[in-house]
Length: 241
Image (cartoon, rainbow, N blue to C red; front, side, top):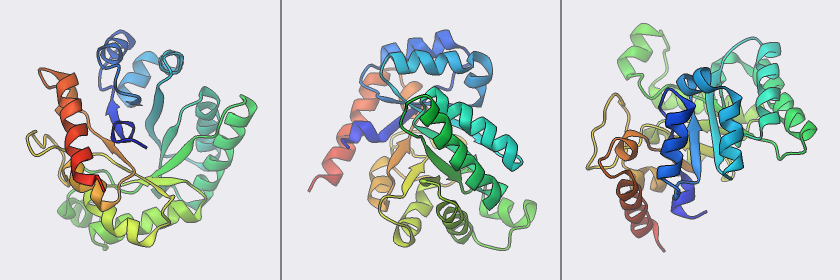
């Protein structure tokens, strides 16, 4: 993949009209993320509109429920032709296996390639203190992320979502074709906003990330197209052989 194909831009807006306006303003972006706010507002018709425009879609709804409910949701999402789907790894092996099988079945019924299911290891807004004190998890952040990613792999999922700071260790212990999607990536010239465990795009790619989710440094910039191009250029220069 080229660098621009490895950058996923979130459609963090509240309506289909605003989302498609953003897509039209950045034709060079090929991969878009649809999250909870937009999906609740616009529904699957937005996904259809993105697919008509030949865009790849990362459906980031972080399904976390009993196995039967997760399976039903993933079957429907597979039928829509999305490319990546997030599920919470903490739902457990039975739910993950059911979700993976259902996503494949849903896509197959529609004559489409199956989506890659991504196990969410730990939200990037969670700090070490919150993990230990609020969630009462005895493992450190990196060890916990690795445990969750291994559970995702063992359950048949094709990848995981992790902080860029955990990508290096996960890449050491997981297969090369296991997809790692890293949100919370921030260029050195952009604000970290509410992200706690960040790296720059260059650092995240060098750590082993497959895809980078980069939102506000692009969409909130006075010139989003120039910001996207700047990030692509920085990454291309840094990772070129």
